Image 1: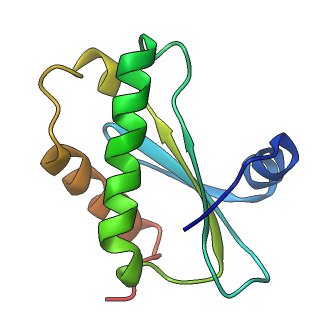
Image 2: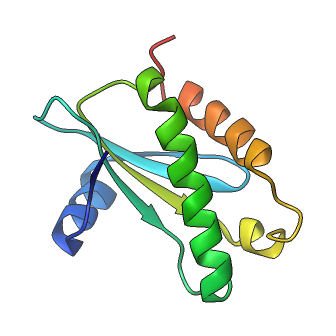
Length: 113
């Protein structure tokens, strides 16, 4: 998995890309010229403390790692956590994130199914 690191890359996707919402998260995506996906994971300070933010980012990375083979190639994708995910951090499980992300990826037409 290639990761997005520079602010310039993130701003380009935010401004020129498309977005799709879910209950716990949203994604921004934009076609790129590579033959691989580049991913970024965002959880702002509004979500919660560092433990909460890191756990959510780990859950999204795990989802991407497990489902990378089903996602179309040549896209820059940013996973953004919503505040509701931070509020439910004690009860949220990987299955909840997975269900939400499957819905988002089908809506955005990024699955190769």
